[in-house]
Amino acid sequence: MHRRFLVAALLLPALGCGPPPASTAIGMRNRAVLTAAEIQGSRTSGWTAYDLIAQLRPEFLRSRGATSLRDPVPVTATVYLDNVRFGNLETLKIISAEQIQWIEYINAADATTRFGTDNFGGAILIVTK
Image (cartoon, rainbow, N blue to C red):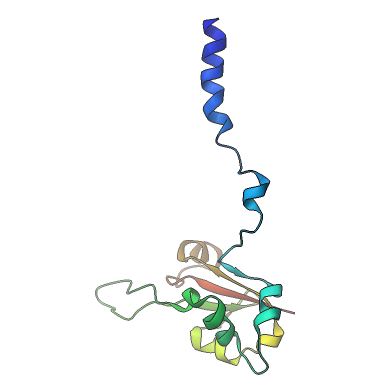
């Protein structure tokens, strides 16, 4: 009797740690990704990648603050186009929105792991068609 109670007491909390039910996952979207459907539905003729991001995910463009006391310059995301370093945020203004399949923002830790140092502001990954 005590053994069954002990097993039940140990298993009950574990059951609550599983993934959420499918019904709660429906309708949720990843704020770190701009999908092809969102881009297609929002772009306007003549828009650039910068215009798209400023309209749909302006948080991608925000500064992450200074990285040291010696260098008070605010840190921003680095832009990667098809997994190749493309430049700073200004380079988004030369990429046509019509070329873009999807856009993703990755935080500084993930960007450093994936692309190496000098990604203290994170990275904006753009994949073209």
